[in-house]
Amino acid sequence: MPKLLSALLLLTLSNALFADERALRFVINDSWSMPLVRIEQGQAVEGILVDLQQRMAAKVGRKAKLLVMPSMRVQHALDTGEIDVRCFVSPNWLNNGHYRYIWSLPFMTQRDLLVGVKPEKLEPEQLLHERLGTVLGFTYPRLDPLFRSGQITREDARTQDLVLRKLSARRYHHAISNELSLQWFNRNQAPNKKLYSLSELASDPVACIVRDAPDVPTMALLRAMVQMKQNGEFEALLARYR
Image (cartoon, rainbow, N blue to C red; front, top):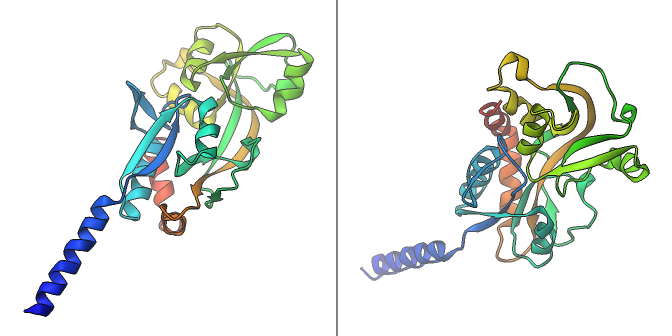
């Protein structure tokens, strides 16, 4: 009987400790749109990143807390340890290091495209004195010299979806979009309203960064992502939104 009582006490304490473990804090950039994420009343409700991050947390026995914030605030939140995991990020996009965080393996490739309202082959360097649809806070390294010289002018919108909607409404002639968002936008467009990829601007591997701290199951999360890659879970998840 004493052994049974000890076992029950140990199980109770283990369950209590598990219940007390806080949710893992993932960041969602409020400039993103479907299929990456759909945001309603400040909450991330569906999309690739919602599915991915909830699955990552579940694999290490935690819940996921999805924190929606402006891109300009993300860096400060990383620096102050307010975020445990940031997904959908590439080293090529960062101006500041994340010395407190460890990179995961890439789970997909993002392709940024020059997009227009009619099919043609066109490179951004061929644009002259145009306003180009871009997302507020997003960086486009290849275009920086063109912006600085005044050859083209950024016209920022708050989200990628708004950039494409303004292009479809002919507010400007060309815009930059990632491939996934362009495909999603075109899904429900009439044939004469579809937008076209004109050339590829950049192709970047996309990964997650995980805070390296005692209160975060850092290595367990990184191992879980390796297993997801090996099991084909990333591709299956992405296929749902293509």
